[in-house]
Length: 303
Figure (cartoon, rainbow, N blue to C red):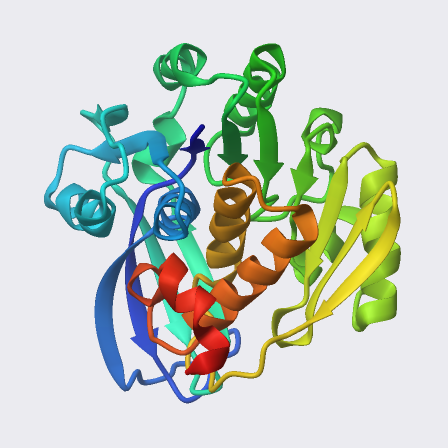
C-alpha cells in the first residue's frame, strides 16, 4: 500500500504584510522568505509525515531552485525516483503574500510543472496498483490529470482529487473520483453558488457528490469540514488553535486524509485526523515546515 501523488513542485517566495494590497496599490512587506511548496509536493510530504509510504511524480527545472524545492521531501524519505527534469523550463515558483491574520494570496508560475506529460504518465502506469491511492491537484496540465484518473481506474486504485486552483467548468471525468476535496472558495467556483456557512457547504457537498464523486468534502477553514457520502451529510467543527499562517493548510488536510485512508482508517476517523493536521499546520509559518507528523497529531489535545 502507498500514497502516490502526481502534481506540482514549487519553491515558495513568501512576503509577510499587514494587509494584502488591493489592485493598483503598493504595500511594503515586513519580511521575505523561501520555502519548498507546490500542491503536489506539499501533499506528498503531508502524507509521508502522517504515516504513509509516499511517492511523488512531477517535474522540476535544471536549476538551483530544484534542490531547494525537494529539500524536505528528500529529508523525510518521500520516494523521488520518478521526478523528471525539464531542460528548458525553470522549477515552478509560487509568490505568496501573507497577512498578519494568517490569510494569504498566491500567484503561481508553473514552470516545469507545465511540462508534466507522457513520460510521467508512463511512470504512473508502471507504479500504480489496486492497493494504492492516487492524489491529484490542478497545478499541472488538466489533460494529464484526466489521463491519470483513467490510469487509476484501470489499475483499480482509489483517487483523491483536490480541485485547486479552481476552474469554473470541471471536466466530467474529474467528478468520477473516490474523494473530491475542494475548499469553500473552490466549491463556489465549480458550482457557481455562494458558500458562507455550514448549511450552504452541506448543500454544495451534496451537489458535488451528485455529479459523480463517491465522497465530496468541503473544507471550511477554521469552521471545520463537511462531507457527503451515500449515507448522508456530516459536519466536523474546526479545531481551536492559535493560527499564525494558513499557507498549506488545505494541502496538509488532503495529504493527511490520503495517508490515514491508506492506513485503513475509517473515513470519519481519517477526516478527524486530517482536520487536526490542517489545524496544527496553521500554528507555524510556511507550508511544508509547518506540517505535523502522525505522533504530533495523535497527541494534539494533550498539548
